[in-house]
Length: 152
Image (cartoon, rainbow, N blue to C red; front, side, top):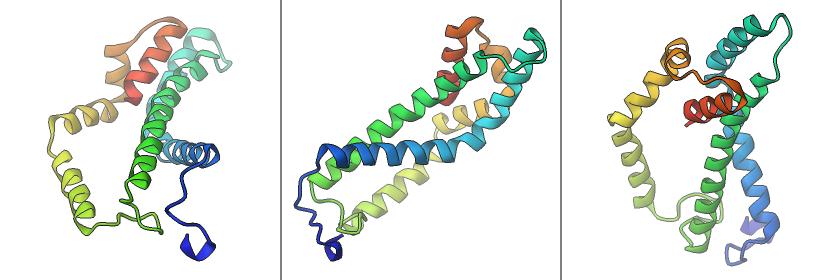
């Protein structure tokens, strides 16, 4: 960034914040859509059987639940990036400015791999049919709740 005439000392503008939020949102949707596809397609098939041959609108409501979770995470990630920028913990290349910080992130990611939280998330994702059968809610509000729950 310094080579482009941009300094890390410059405060973020609203435009920077919006672009960072959009970047995180697009990235989250691109990364998470393939893993959500099995449950979304199964939900679509179940709804199609109830409503005939056409694709029901409730499928988009279910997907909106996922998007709410991913958009919320994107807002948190953009805020964290802003905070790291403000505290000069990012280098001009947007990397961690302190070597210990990268190591701490790597260790935290490794610890997460053996937590009950990780196992619970995998249990939901590995059995889309089981999830839908045990968490089924009728109507649009139920579809959003299921999308939010599974997206989380």
